[in-house]
Image (tube, rainbow, N blue to C red; front, top):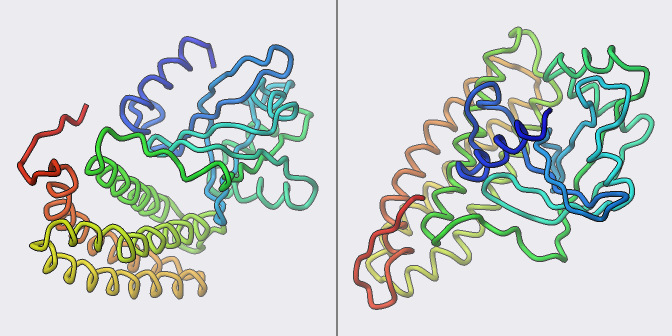
Length: 289
């Protein structure tokens, strides 16, 4: 894509925490920053990605079917350490090029999710590379691109809302007779993310807030019960995915969407004012800019 068009996407992506308008609305995109193979300069490029579980995502060096690999791919071959921006999180990652059967399986999943990848491969004689981006845990936790603790929670919640909306759309776009491998991975990645988020709230965030705001105790108890109920719904979705039954999976995704939206809305109502309150307990307002 032209550099000025890329920059427009980058600017909107950062300003709107990963949400885009126009032709990329609803797409799974991230910003990938690589180090120039020859110049050593840092370059940021919007790229599509596939969730892959286990703390990694996949990016595909299609370059729209060009006969040459994209610059960002040549850069990461020389310098595998990259920076990833999801719109909410920024983290360091190690880029690993998939080889042989692992590459072919991953590319087949990509094609299953979007036939456009097959069209790109048909346009070129080169084998389009698939790259796994592994989050580097030793670099510290991902940075949350938020101006306050309350905004951070709201943005993380919006990640779950957005991912569920994408999964529902993917289920609706299917032919109704199969549950694709990539769609199963998308669902399982969401399930794991929800589990980790709720575990962190139960073990650290909620006790911390309750210690500072004793009036939060009743909400904490309710939110804990809701976490247990959502975990049961997540488990039902896992079972549906194991049977490869798209109708049952769709039912469970809809149920999870409804339960989670009610839960997130209540949590935001109860928790966000406390997270963003100054230490003396007086109220204050925060801009969403």
